[in-house]
Image (cartoon, rainbow, N blue to C red; front, top):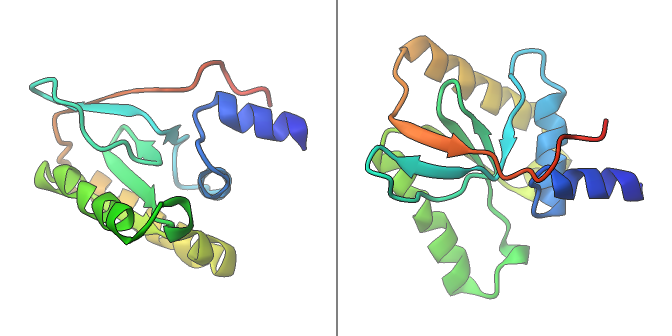
Length: 140
């Protein structure tokens, strides 16, 4: 258990819900390996909102929105609104909650897989550069 937690932290995961999301995404037979919390920049070098999971081949962001990890309604609202910089660049964003991951993981996975397949089929990839945040390769 400790090794698993250390492994996730070293790969760039910032919270338990993010770890749960990444484990779920990695169970897919459709999705490639996601990046955890990569640093994103647009084609002008401006930093963008950091997605919790990122599929670089299609520039797809997955965001875990959890009220529990925010200091109040204002911070929660700012977090939700921060995704708009990604949307403005036509980056698909799939929003999920920790409760939805726990309650209906198959539905969450299906939503992400569908968004991935749609992004891939569109042939459009926004001009965004992603830099992984993981400190070391995964242990497993």
